[in-house]
Image: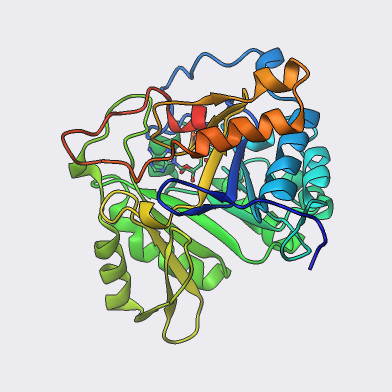
Length: 338
Ligand code: SAM
Ligand code: SF4
């Protein structure tokens, strides 16, 4: 046990908050229909984006003072940020006080740059990778991402495996009538490649505002369709949002993220930091809390901690997707950091 003292962050619903998503950029080289508009978004000015030093300072406060044990880098597309391994090296050395273990450092990427940097990321201390790939059919892939990069992403998955990432998870946003006929194809792909598919329900965070309930493919349906071909068994697990299932024949596992049909808000232990240093207690939060301002006006660690505590004190019980009182956030997924 470490001798360092820390104070756990507990929200008003008695949930322990301990997992931080950091968006390192709002920019992206893809234009996925469920996330960004075709023309892109108005990018943040470079001076408005947190520097590596600023990100590292905040991450240290979360880990050392509040005992956070998980950090995931995301975006936008994190790999478009120059010198990313430098940031990873700084974050991967953080030690969680209660366990004396290094923080579990993960990243979500569209995979297009992994052939170039997977080895460097691994060497810098990145532990886990999720790679987004929404279709195994080049035309459908292009229609969903507005980029003709399926081969690059497939090669990126190979590069991640070759670099020694274990497990490699693949994120698939399921959209009714677009890619839901590929559910079993993805299961087969996962079984042969040795990667774990994570099927994500489509959430109302697309910049185009085209989301509706009819486009959501319920997680239960995904599990049933795979189970008919490759029998599955549920895994009992902790507060992670993915419901996990292993194949009864031992050929790997899948996960489904039922954010819409079975929200996991009751177990939510997450908070988020946007690329410009806004702290958010939920993907769907309406309020955000400025940490950059405190950083850049010479604020102390104590002042930053107070702002974080005040923000966590506003964390709500959960989102209301599908209900009449649901308020759509003004930011898209890429602007928050998915
Ligand atoms: N650019 C990286 C990528 O695509 O993996 C990281 C950022 S992206 C916003 C993070 C994850 O959010 C991706 O797996 C993406 O598929 C998912 N995502 C984006 N918009 C979504 C939406 N409207 N509903 C559900 N998942 C979404
Ligand atoms: Fe870019 Fe990821 Fe959003 Fe696609 S989901 S547009 S890859 S940020």
